Length: 584
Image (tube, rainbow, N blue to C red; front, side):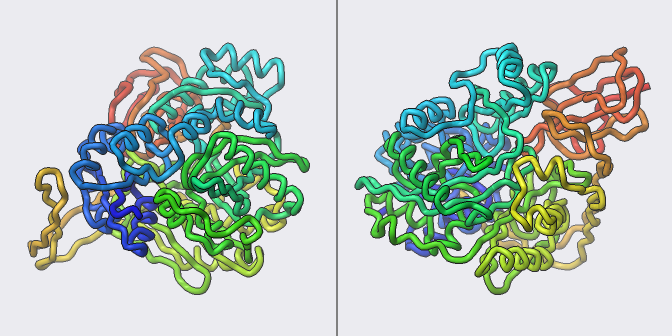
């Protein structure tokens, strides 16, 4: 059995893995960047080691630093979580070449399924039809235009080595092809370390339904049940549930069997998810995620299985001790992702900052998987998922009402969150009837009534307080407690964005101030400047593209005129309220 696991990740998934390891008597090793020195996953782990750096590329995507920690800590296994290196063949091979167990599929399976192009080919070879598209890497925007003109618009550009909606851009017409491809490639490189992209038809009103599988090294592959993840923004999931509503049992069985075929075709072992698009009674293979999914808790609540435990047991060489006919699905589970985003006007703008208050829900059938607590800071450099709120009910309507009650009990201050938007989603008649699609949140729902987020100032009192100070001894984290006078810190409120809804485009849109001085509503990194001094612009034109929390955001002019000053360049770091462009 595995004795010590290094979790090559951060946030709520690292916390999730640590908790199951602790229940199983397995020691845990956390790794952290300079910004995560006192993060929750670091505090909970048995040991923690510094990777250095702030950005993901400098820390959690630093292979050599992680391999060094494996050696120094004596970990005999690595859990990659999701994102970062979870679907990276080279990383998996580097781990196994050290004689360390990789808690996931064999590198060969990641190679086939981690590349979305080769996964399409593998699914077709297994007799499972995919979404119509091109099964080769894009080399230019001309290929996007040619495909759209031949098969019709819209089309979807997708990261070949991605997932979770990162690096995916929808192109509605030929003029959008070039900037959309550039944006998809930048996001893919930033989040997954590779920028290859491919092309698919964008279905008009599909549902996103995925199938959880478990496979051991003894030839057993089972499907555990489906999850409906159709409530999305920016092609990233907001609400997930199991079982899928209005989903015929014969289709469920056929999809489960198709997922098993795809898994066996690539020699898959461990937990994985096969994703499909479902429309008009038909389903199409979308991709296989060769890792644990963010939304795995809904499957756990309806099946009674701990998927992380089974990941560890399978990685230790154990066989599944139950068969397909033994899988039971009871009741209904719903999960919402609590993201640090301001949903005002339907824009879902990233909202980095410090959580000043976090009241967590409780009661029957309520589970919270969080990666942060009050006092923790959510950085612009990482994904903005605060946590996942999951509920179980004996039927879908009871689960829905329980979720609304749990959201009402949840209080988060200091950053904006998606919780107000979740209430609108869960209360909408289309969601209640289960007739929504992946495009529904962005095309049909009205978020205009949501108030613009305004963080409260934080006051700090006088007197001696305990201060936990983190030191590093040979790179290993050690915490000591000191009692020091409490400082009087002034916290300045960040400028807030307007509630106006942007035009549909391949970036999330944020608007300037309307005064001619274009400001950014959040901290982030400038990835592209679209204008130069002397250029004429119209209200609504994109002047810069800002990356925050691994998402690209178009900052738009609210005033027509001529650019008189450009105060930033690509690569610059900016803070909320900074003036980036001036228009006269």
